[in-house]
Image 1 (spheres, rainbow, N blue to C red):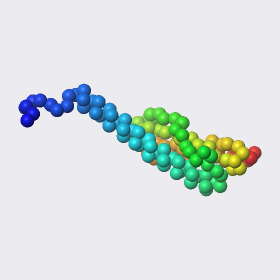
Image 2 (spheres, rainbow, N blue to C red):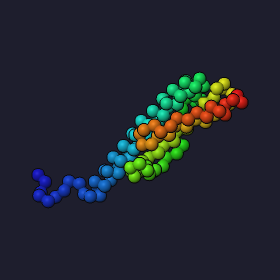
Image 3 (cartoon, rainbow, N blue to C red):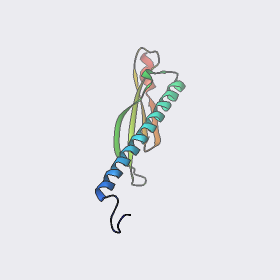
Length: 115
């Protein structure tokens, strides 16, 4: 039996627990968005009839950003990938998330005309 007034976890223990839970949640969210970015890159490359190189996307930028509409902070993530119309040259692509929402998917197809 626990005596009255005694706590099971101290404040320091709770703080460490919240930090660990926050890190795990952030990692889980990041992994989920990474898989979503890969699927978006594959779809965009298929629609543009170009080849997604290395079959991968990578996190290029992560920052805290203030949304002007409601004044809240969001995490902005930039995932980069490379594509090629012929396999000979590599061109950059970019997927931007604002929070968990897709902000943009960009394949700079104007630069592939020299290919």
